[in-house]
Amino acid sequence: MQILEDLSGISVLDLSGETRVATRPEVPVPVYGERIVEGFRIWDPYRSKMAALLIKSHIAGTFYKLVSDLNLSPASKILYLGAATGTTASHFSDIVPAGLVYAVEFSARSMRDLLVLCTARDNIIPILEDASCPERYGPFLEPVDLVYQDVAQRNQAEIAARNAARYLKGGGALVLMIKARSVDVTADPKAVYKAEVERLAGVEVISSADLRPYHRDHWAVVARKEVERR
Amino acid sequence: MKITTWFGYIDASTGEVSLAGGEEEAGGRLMRISEETIRSSIKASSAIGEVWAADLQPDLRKLALEAGLFAGDCEYNSALRSTALRLVKIQLRASAGAEADLLQTIEALDDLNEVINALEERLYEWSRLTDDRRLRGAALAEALAEEEGSMGELARSILALAETKSSVTKSLEAAARTIAPNLAGLAGPVLAARMISRAGGLKRLSEMPASTIQVMGAEKALFKHLRGKAPSPKHGIIYRHPAVVGTARGARGRAARALAAKLAIAARIDRYSGETDPRLKEALDRRVQEIRDRPPGRRKKRGEGKDDRSGRRRTDR
Ligand SMILES: C[S@@+](CC[C@H](N)C(=O)[O-])C[C@H]1O[C@@H](n2cnc3c(N)ncnc32)[C@H](O)[C@@H]1O
Image (cartoon, rainbow over all chains, first blue to last red; front, side, top):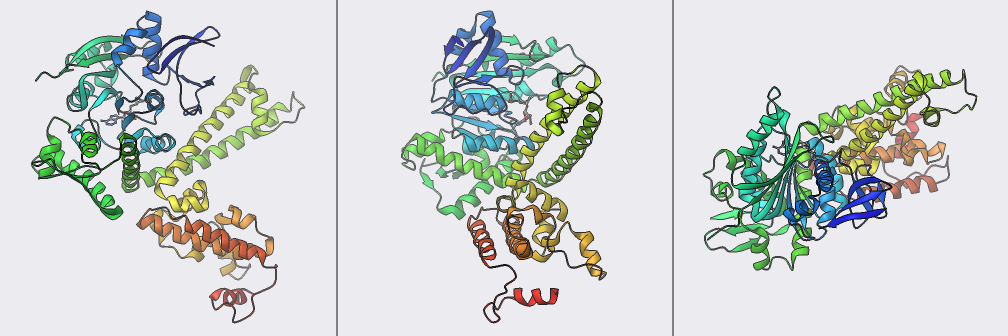
């Protein structure tokens, strides 16, 4: 095993010729059946869009820029919208050992599995709520450094914009995974994606990438919120 | 104007922060938060609605730390985490779909078992034409998974189904633990789910007398007994519980009765409060030990136990 790149707790590894991203948990046990190699949890790009984005950025030579844009530190607070059963959230949990991941998920079925993860980790806060009503989880939250969203919903850009407006610190990053088909099944995915990006009010898009071959009709958008001027 | 947060109240005009007192208060507050925020998103004019519907999020951590409610970030994080875990468990238990989902999950598990058994049997018959290793079950499927052609395909399907089974089992266990933590703790999550399914829901299970729970799943034997053709059944699906199987044959009836009594209590606690009570498990273990320590066949002397146990035993005979 060889470490090719390493920043903010995210590593790119060479595993006998294969390029993989990984995070390093305090206790290296698998969460969703992923491989453990020398203390690293290998982050599956087919199961996690964030892993797909990271691998693609490594190949494109923009890994360092992408991860710096996320501006993460071990004590960062992350708001994760659409946490599902926690595949990706578990890696974020590795990345911020002294911070918190606020994991919002509105499906009771997924939340039951997510709870198993939340019990095993001490830095994931489960929230059973609808991300399109951000004020509902206000009584639990604080301003955060990163908003990550993967909800595969019709009004995904609007949901992201409203959450970023309310919870993202000035200068903080938004990572939005856009599913081009859940918005309109018939339209051209690329056009759908563009239209969604235009709806991203209040943040400035700094990069975007499609997630082929790992996820079809998905794009990742990274944006930054302006530092508030007084 | 007071606004509600997970740790207490903030007076929005003075900025004063207070910690709500006691466990009772905290539980009630959590449910209020979730109800009020739901209402506030519809009608943003209530006192709470105004603040939480506003666009900017107050920095709750900073407010709480400045008010000295927590010693530091670590303490804030861990208190927030346990509060959130508790609220989510309450919400899940309250969500109507959760139980229906559990019932489907256990049916799915039974179906998977049946299908896997049938396919493994078929694979065995088939493999005997060419293979005399006489492996069976999962071991056989694994041995043949690399083969080409239909037989290998079948073996791979069996392995895939086995994987499905293990993930269905996992979510079944998680669901049983959130819906009925005490029952799952005593019976094990899968048996707990099976009992809820047999009873037609936690509500109905919690209304059953222990004697019904004891013979649940042994209905055939029970009716035979009622027709006068067989001895009364001593245990149904709870038979597979270690408290029963681990007890000598002669005392199993008594072990099953003790177990059923505790399971009935567990179901009631789960229906009405949901707080996990470890004393239940300790009490069961103690009772089962007592039963095992008493030599088989010897009954308590009369007058020693005023409970109905010895009386009922005699009418059995
Ligand atoms: C594609 S999955 C996310 C997978 C996850 N990000 C991962 O990589 O592990 C989308 C999830 O978002 C949830 N979801 C969709 N709309 C939501 C909403 N409005 N609020 C909260 N969760 C939502 C769904 O229930 C589903 O679990």
